[in-house]
Length: 477
Image (cartoon, rainbow, N blue to C red):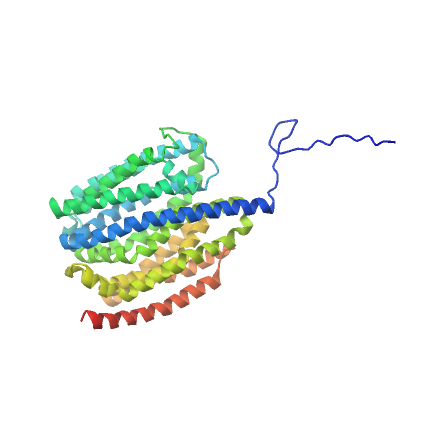
């Protein structure tokens, strides 16, 4: 007798009755395939970010050396003050549009265009606010008088950045960094050529730097719509998208507001307590000492954050191990560069820059020493954002603000300008305590790695400091 075999219907991802997609749990092989693809994208994105950063910063480094022979420190100090004010206004109104576009699951035009509309309106309002405060700020100190006419012009960059295509961000979300990297490199080249050309042939004033800044922002805005044309932005408002952006950005608003004070209060206090000339020396020193950390932050923002966000969405279980791998690959080379800055900072500035900038060498050492701890805490900021804990990011930068104010003002009270700058160097080391507590609540505190980097980096920094004194005695004195 033959069994009556009935065919068993097999569902292949589709429900036959209601035609709705059936979720099939990913297998370990799926995770490995996705992980390999994500790793490949991250490596490729890191390479393009490195090409863009190395090219742009290399040219900027050379241009700063050339400009040091054309412009006096007061010009750099005034430019530092301008950029600090503009950056502050941008942070005062930041509701996290860029991180939200990277982190949110939505990828439809309504969401992107609502974000772009918010971005445009914000840029125009920022320019208006900068124009309104320009004259009151110019009356604070005699050194600040040029702000009355410089700030309304420099703040046009807010409008231009607001008009920039959201494709700039979505390319980063998908780890397609090539177009963004090439665009940034090209605009950096043009901006630097304009600055040096104007300073040499036209005017040796701050206008050479301001015009170069405007030209760079204009070119970035135009090319973002042409080189990355995957999205055609238009004015649009969707209430649901607006609500999602604000919900995610409410903590980002507080975070960036505090970040401004934490990251820029040193420049404001310096400008208020000392001359724009010393602020110019600080600006030159920070540009040199921040070469490594800036590259690290670029990678963290454009590669690390999108990659961690994607990994957290796909495979939360492997998140922590991948985080440690990323930190090992990125942190060690930057720490090596910072130790090199501590070793050769004074002799390098004396031999390469114009003589009037030689005093910036010891400031390079202080900033580099502080950044050693910053390299440990920076990835934790990406953890907060990738896991959707923007509140923790706000608390982290609040801790940095408290450490910055305490360290700099105490240092100034004890030892004047030198003590103030030493307080800047100590800030990141003090902040680590808060970050360790916060990231531990996320389940991602990697204390063994942190201890090795902080203790080992600190000891090597002291050795480099003694070595720099021998080099200065041997080759400069």
